[in-house]
Length: 588
Figure 1 (tube, helix red, strand yellow):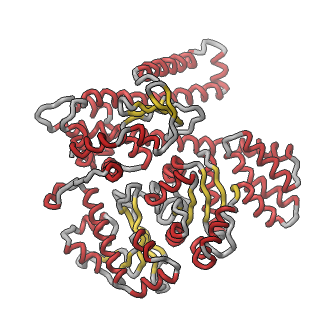
Figure 2 (tube, one colour; figure 1 turned 90 degrees about the vertical axis):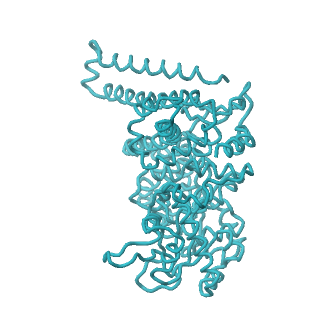
Figure 3 (cartoon, rainbow, N blue to C red; figure 1 turned 135 degrees about the vertical axis):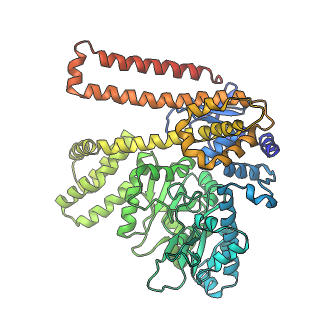
């Protein structure tokens, strides 16, 4: 496996890889650009072709071609390995078929999902009613094959029996979310998907991680759509349906289109809009999902392009889901537009009944979220000035408050004033009140955003370090002392111990024949220290703010101010150590 990693590294240099994702410009021996892992106005992200690494002086993100793809694409190491191997033209044999018992739990799940996708595809080829349904919705044969659409036979155990014949265990089949155990433990497991057209969902590298099934014949009892449950390889808050097929087009066209359903997505791609992704089967429209999860869900789309067109169904449910989405998107600094569709007509209907040109017009005529909402409010108020003012205060100004740019806020305040007849001064006054009322909500969103960015940076480093420690723990000739890493990462060790074999695999893939192990461990330990320093700095800044906001704290500051001085000393100490670490990085 080490040879595969070496082959990939020899064929893909870090500069060409990163430049395929973000814009860079020459800066001495290095190249610089805006960091894709945190919001910034001034470029602080540097790539060193000489060292084969990148480093952000703003947020501390660092690594090689593999960690860059892991962080940017939201993949684990094996997913990044597959993606880069495909890009480099390297044939990758992760495991031999004969050694199935050596595979990790996750690897077995990927295998059972792939086997299931192929089984569903064969079912569709033999089922005329399912084929006719897809054709009636306007799907072409090529589209059906490209999206690997399949069919689950209306039978209790067809898939289960097939997978058992392929030597998959009950545990693997259940863990993959493909079958359920009945309440009567004496009976066999039964298929989750039955009598449904099946849409496979892939991660960013194209590996099948989940399924979404649409009922072919309504029986009056079953849900129209059924999605895979969360599994070790599928987290509904970290994937968008179609992202594997859409990402290149999103980057190329500099905007994405977000739709709700599978048919919306597939037909939009068929119509030529390959930059479309869908929230179907994910957390995007779930009102119980945390902001952190929505931000995580939006992460890849946001890194590919800040521009997004929202094309949800134009009903109350679609508007409610879209509004929640828009608040987070605006807080992330995204430019969000809404596709204005006819009442009761979804994207799939627009394309299949009115044609590709009609869909193209809908996308072309999309409006920024704030003017779109303003039009709806004024229509609802129907000339009642008092009612429109109340609705603007309640429903629209909170979104203006989410805008990051003061210039944009001013622009939209003027627009609202011109369209509604409300004085700008009155709108500005109310906006200040809204800002004060929503202060803690905005802070909560900012904290969630920082937590997601922090997780993006820390996870790959912690995984790599722990993999090395687990590997070296049982090595005959140790190069590094694993206990040093275990002490530093005691909390992460507990969280990640269930994927120990995956982590060891990753470490061996990189360092089995490498002379850089100690050097890389030292560098990663510095990265982790920097992350811990950043966390401690945030805590100290909060302590200082609370002390100054507290009247008692203010009273004390007029005297000795001992507590404030102690916090300031700690902040100074943290900043000095951070500066030492930064000075040890490659020079600009």
